[in-house]
Image (cartoon, rainbow, N blue to C red; front, side, top):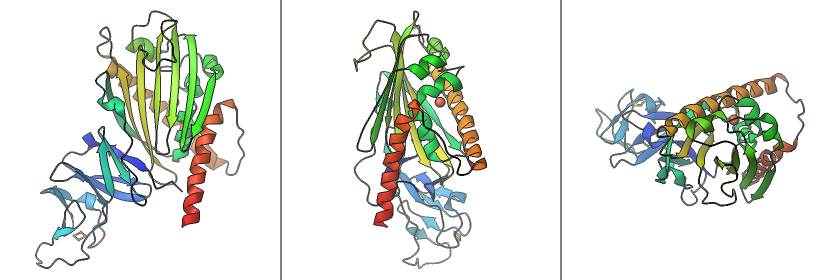
Length: 338
Ligand code: FES
Ligand SMILES: [Fe+2]
């Protein structure tokens, strides 16, 4: 089960070019395209004539034409043309979904009446940052990705070539976990530590660094603010602190119960002595997330090899366990209401 009444990421606006984009989101096959006004349309990906996916068709005049017998649909889902037939039956329509574009992210609401606007991802439109991102597909359930992102102690073991660093320092970093409503926050600090490879490649640090990781979990996505300043130069409690910033956005959208879309961007602060740092950060972040995908898919394969086998908790699991309790409660509420 998934909590349905949330804004979930369906994609990025730059993915919508001159072809329909098909994605299964929370078990709903959806086709997306740009309407005549440049807005985004999202429809059930099934022609009402003989059930062929509309995504096999073509975009035409701001609508989408089925690639089998040519029914043409408006962005509203209403059929507006049946080739060779004048009368269009009232039932000739497909289900539209509510979508909104904010900060170049396409959000979709698949539950009951959408509540408010999708969340703001401010770093995408902040002139102090530049960003780039992509999408991964996981053969694993979405909550294993939440677990991974809420517990960054793993970076010292999994990401030794990029954002890692000393594994012991990561495992021993003081960690604060707090939550309110459907939000969990995990804050970790690593003062006077060695900069990892990505940090050294992207920013001219002078020596040791004071490093932070601030993770904000929401049901459909996480914002992870990481970075560092030269050791002893600025307070890590100052929200306006300078230094090297990496603001990660992670849209975790279940495809099915056992597969997941992982939409991500990384925004980084700029430095005159590191003009290409966005490309460095992007390449190394993509490599980092590929390492996570390999670990998590292996984990899930093994969980299926050992069905029902128990697992223990350790100190690093506190944030992930809170997020799981939030999702369990939302699913239980939905089940009661059904
Ligand atoms: S199946 Fe779409 S027009 Fe026939
Ligand atoms: Fe990771």
